[in-house]
Image (tube, rainbow, N blue to C red; front, side):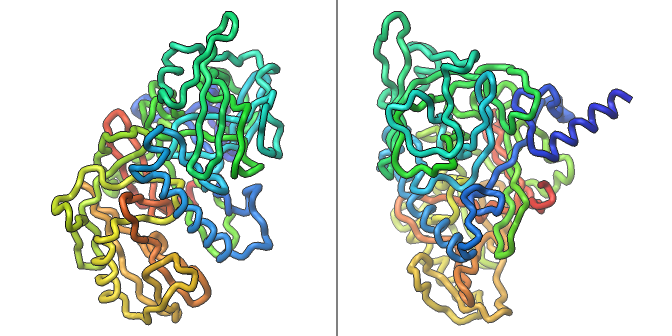
Length: 449
């Protein structure tokens, strides 16, 4: 009877989306790995605080395209980000929010969940300079579990030397940080450890370990007022994934619900440490993660792309061989970016396969668009990663950018390739940092909500 009661309580907590990192009601997979699940709230979802019902679907979609173009620029090898291992949040913030609570007593905040950055940080009092924030700004002086990190500690040393600021202040040699972003936004403050919960303050949580985060007292630029900071989910040592690695065995996955013209109240899910592959392992495709600098990003090797039955090797004129780790998979970038020379081949193949009238995008974002006559037969596009063939449905590769306008959501890029979140929707995508693999499993993500 007690077992039934515990399961019932767990289901109630799950349904209300309030599962905590430190909850005693954690799930345990069959292989003994403890885990937990949280909501990912798309910024354009009707349940997002940024949602404006007066904005049209096409307006919101176009803005997500523009944001991804700006974001992609900060992934490039010569960008400030790669040079200084700084974050890549762009104008308007990220695409997904995660609800968190920090401190004792807990303060509930909404932060950007970002697979393209490492440092976890929130705005903190006393503010020397803070951007406007709708929720209360965290005051570490009111938290009994807040501890500043000293210079020379492992957390402080994990900061890049250009981001680390160490200067003795009295007895304590506090570890400071300073991050600047590609859009001239910035955050400066102190590194600290704090009690950390994913979800709502309604959950009963007990800390299992301290989480290192930045307490930003000088923050400014283009951050949204609904966001309190960033939850870094990248591969670097200060990310939430790395800090919880021993607890979750370096494993996390997410399932992104497709966007649509109709209001979509389904929430995407992110799972930490949970074995989600028991349903149909035959559908799972694994590909290696490639180790490259900076270790923040998740690099895969894209060997080819097929349009229908036409296979195109992913290489260019200056390098006839497929490069290892030639594409970044990123949940915060909407579009997919491909090498511009390869893209020319893709464009020719698309013209040959799609029997519809080719038209120009009046906004100038997309190279390949067709007039939507209501009966356009769009092809299956397969991304051939090393050892993994991922079949992308039209929902992953085409968007109705305007009335009567269908556009390929892959665009050319010089110097960077990114597998964006539209291409990832309706897949359970799992990362295993201990085994250095990523898996793809076709999934109706709305049913996971």
